[in-house]
Image 1 (cartoon, rainbow, N blue to C red):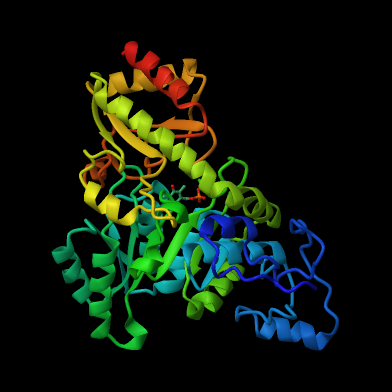
Image 2 (image 1 turned 90 degrees about the horizontal axis):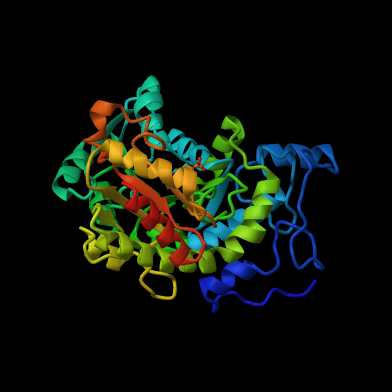
Length: 426
Ligand SMILES: *Cc1c(COP(=O)(O)O)cnc(C)c1O
C-alpha cells in the first residue's frame, strides 16, 4: 500500500477533499472514493477475537487491525466520517449519530447525573429546549436558562456545586446571537481549578449555524462541539446526521452511549455526508454567505422591514464578537448563511407575507431545516421553536413575528426579486 502523504501542511479546504488520504478504517488501496458499506454484522475469525471486540469496545481501535462486530457498535464508513469531522473541528475525536438531536441527547445524558444541573443559554433550538426542560427533569437533572453572555450571572452558576454542564449555541438559532466563547471558557476553567477531578464543569456548544468553516470552538477552549450534520455539512437535504467532537478521554463513554441509546447514523447517510457533503461544504458555504449579505442588505434598506439580524451587518448588536469569532480557516470574515428579520406591522402581515412566498415564490420555499442548496423560509415561533411555551417565548428571545431565512445557492438577484415581490403585496 502506498504510504499516505502528510496532511499536516494542507489547509482545511484541501483536507475537506482528501481527509486522512488513506483511511485506517477500510483495507482498500485502489478506491479513490471509499466504498459504501452495508453490512449490519461482521464476520469474526475466532471466538477470541469476537470476545476481544466486545470487551474492548469503545476504546480507540487498533487501527492496523480494527475489529468490526455489529453496525450499532462501530462500522467503517461512519468511522471515516468521524475522522473527517474531528479534523475539520480540530478535535481529538468525533462520534457520529443519526441526527443532531441524537448527538445532543446522548452527550447530555453522558455528562449529567441526577441531582446535577445544566446551565444553558435562554435561546435554544426548539427540540434542545424540550430535551432540557421536559426530559432531563424526569431524571432529576435540573436546568437554568440564562443569558450566557452575562458573565457576572454565569459566575454565580459556576460557583454552584451542582452545575456540571454549560450549554449554548455558538450562533443562536434563530436569532443569531454570538456567544463570547473565549470569556465563557476562561470562567469555566477558573471555576474548575477549585473543583475535584470528578466534579469538573464541561462546556458543550452547538456549532450547527456556524459550521467548522466559520468557527472552531475548541480553539477557544470549549470542551465539546455538536453539529447537526443534517444542515450545512450535509447540505443537499437528503441525509440526517449529527456528531459530537470530544476529548479523547470521552470517546469510550460516548460510543457506549450511542450503542445503548441506539442513535446510530445509517452508513448510507454517513457515506453521502462524507463523500458529497464535507468535500463541497466550504464552497457552498462561501457562495451562500455571499448571497446572504446581499439579501440582508436589501432587507435592511426596505421600508416595510422593521429589523434585520445578520452577523455580517454592522447593525448586528454583537458585530464586534462576530468579527472576532466568525472566521474561515483561511482568515476571512464568515458571518454565515442565516438571516432573521421582522416586518413592520402585526402578525397578520407576517403571515400574509410568508404565505405569499409559499404560494408564489420560485426560489424560496416555506420549509424548516437550513444550510441547504435551496433557500428556505420559516417562522420559528410557530414552527422550529414551537416547543417553547408561549409564556416563555419572550424570555427565550422568540418574537412570534420573526422570520428566518436560510440562503441557498440560487442567484442572489432571484431571491431578492422574490422577496421584493411578496413585500410589495403586504
Ligand atoms: C436542526 C438543529 C438541531 C437538530 O438537528 P437534527 O439533525 O434535526 O436532529 C440542533 N441544533 C440546531 C442549532 C439546529 O439547527
